[in-house]
Picture 1 (cartoon, helix red, strand yellow):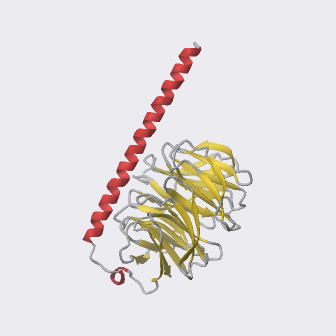
Picture 2 (cartoon, one colour):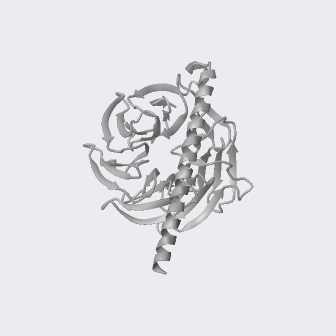
Length: 361
């Protein structure tokens, strides 16, 4: 009997690994096909930067060049003087960097990951950063000297996203293994793993008050969890609801007052949800031709910023639902990452063309 149980366990494990490998091949193939579609669209573009910036309110301030791969995430420091970026993908530059925005120079580089860095975030005190990578690890780094503090390796597959609790003591990361893991940032140890979705966890974020965790997934849903207990609270979208996403959710954000959730999807839409019931869709923006890779709220919670595969960054006004701004830089390809500065007056975009752009807004 014992041998039979061992055999069945090994068989189950083998089937699961084979399924995961098939899913990975499918994801990589879909990504490659999407890049080809976007590149073909880029070849047909004839507009210039001046023609595609639709308002004089947005002016290109800086081009931060030095990344050797697409820019997968961007985030401002708390004082707005520095920008943290994460790179990876074609080109093999699997690093995170901190830039001095005023000078446009790199002041720190974080090297050590062996595969694409999907996201980099600051801790609240600005003294450390966390990175999530396809090498299946989350790493914690010292900002001052760029040295690795912790290498956290509990996930069984690629780590796609990471977020830090507002208290700076805890972090969470989401993975292609369909889970999110909670980490103690004082010890670098995992404190729990949660089966979060039926497919890859592509995005994860804490609410500003630290009470909730929102996740997005390739299973087309957004889910809300209690940050302390990790218990599931509610689900947004997906094919089970009439107003749900029809493609992978690639990005999520929680409003500063924690009352709304924003999601961007492979289905080319941006959707705004009310968080109390989990069933009320407040607004859907559809005037986009390609996947929405990044969504975020302005610091005052009144605007929405999104980056997409049609080489544009857009801003909408939440109150009116109207598109306020559309930005396209010269040579800019798919906008994979976006961020507002703390004062809301500056925008950062990270692109597949390996360039970070800073815009006055």
